[in-house]
Each structure stands twice: as C-alpha cells, then as structure tokens.
Image (cartoon, rainbow, N blue to C red; front, side):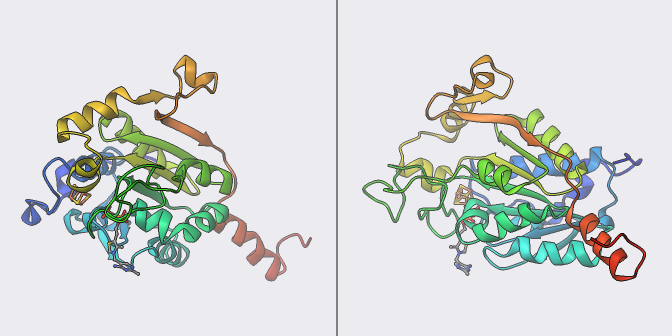
Length: 279
Ligand SMILES: Cc1ncc(C[n+]2csc(CCOP(=O)(O)OP(=O)(O)O)c2C)c(N)n1
Ligand code: SF4
C-alpha cells in the first residue's frame, strides 16, 4: 500500500473522549496508540478507514478513533465487516474484537472469514477472559486458570487463535504482546497492507479480573511476565519447533498470497457476464 503524506497519529484519536474508560494497567490503550501510529505511518486518510467493533472493553476502541466506525453486536463484528467490505471494496476495514467476541461467541465467523479470505484486518486483544462483564471464562482461558465462572480452575483447554486462523486459510497470521510495541506496530502495518484476511492476536493484561484472580501481581509485573515469557519466531528454539510450555510465540506466524474473496468473486461475475472462462 502506497504511503500518502497524511495525518500525525494523534489526529486519528478523539482527544475530546479522553480519558478512556479502561482500567489502570489494562493493555487496551497501548494497542489503540499502536493502531493510530500504524494508520498514520501508512498515510491512510481517515475517511477511507472503517473500524468495526464488537462488544467488550476492547470493543469500546471505536469511541476513541477518529475514523468511520460501526459498533456491532457481541460476536458478530466479522459478519458486519464482511458486508461493508463487499459493498465498499475501496475502504480499509479493521475489525477490533476481544477473545470472547472473536473466539468464544464469534468463533464460527472467525473460521469463515479466514476461509473466505475476506480482505479485512482482525485485531484481537486476548486477555484470556471476558473483561467487561466481570472476568468470565472464555475460549482462550488456559486449562486450570481461575475466572469468575471457573473458581476452582478451568477444566477446558484454551484455543490457539493463530493456529485456527492459519488452518482456516488467512493470508497473514501474527501475534504480538502489548510489551512488544515496535513489533505490534509493524505487524499492524503489515496486516493492514496485506490483501486478504489478516489476523493479529495481541496478548494483553486484564489486571482487574484475570490478573487478580490468578495472582499475577501488579500491572508492571504482568508486563514483565509478557516480556520474559515471549519467544520470537526467529529464536533458535522456535525455529526448531520447541516452544516451551506456557511461552508465547510472537512474530509473523504464517503468510500466503491466496486470492481474496473479492478477487475470486470477480471471476464468477466475469463468467456470469460471458466474459470469463467457463469451468
Ligand atoms: C449476544 C450477547 N451476549 C452476551 C453479551 C454480554 N457481554 C458483553 S461484553 C461481553 C464479554 C466481552 O469479552 P471479550 O470479548 O473477551 O472482550 P473484553 O471485555 O475482554 O475486551 C459479554 C459476554 C452481549 N452484549 N451480547
Ligand atoms: S476489565 Fe480488564 S479488559 Fe476491561 S478495561 Fe479493565 S483491565 Fe481492561
């Protein structure tokens, strides 16, 4: 995507809406700033960007972004975003979801958006629980973790969201944490620029619920945990496929250049009008 002489990053932020509603120590503000910086670095005019959100703490991000926005229902943001992209292909459509939104109630939409390879960028803030409604268990909560609905430990395994997005066919799959700000910004830029479905998981602390119940310490200690427990994809152990249990693999995990949904659909349109090659 060609960079235009554009706005400064803070021009993508609605300053009149600050301070934001997130708890002290929450990672959401870091992701918001990185997103604004990525949009500015790409020189994207604000009127060309649509932010589609679901419901949840991270789903409030559109309140603070000076772009087009559609605040949708819990778990359905990808379906609304798909409609926008098909109707207005010239728009850059970003879908901001929590792990509950994207993977728990909305898991089916995730696999189909990736399978169709719709030209969207999904930015999923994974804090391992339902933050907004009081810290309930989610589909990414690790086995054994304590939440408000699994007081004696979660009996289920948590999803690896990146493996799902990769297996379903997303063109770009990546993971960062809110500690790794330059990586997060770079992956956001790459995801937005990439044609087809881009999936970016951002591991982020929810000190108020998940951190407190699992005795993960202060917000600063949770950040230190993210620093010490992350492993880059280029680290020797990661290259050998030996990621130790409990470590977070970060970086670009999968990339392909399959035709996106609109390109594939255009071929069908051509055939329907007699211009394309019939199968
Ligand atoms: C259909 C529907 N079910 C449940 C809810 C209640 N609800 C609102 S936010 C939320 C959880 C949000 O968790 P997550 O998506 O992980 O985002 P976070 O708050 O952690 O950022 C739930 C269950 C709702 N609004 N709509
Ligand atoms: S409840 Fe958790 S996810 Fe929600 S704003 Fe507070 S720290 Fe962030």
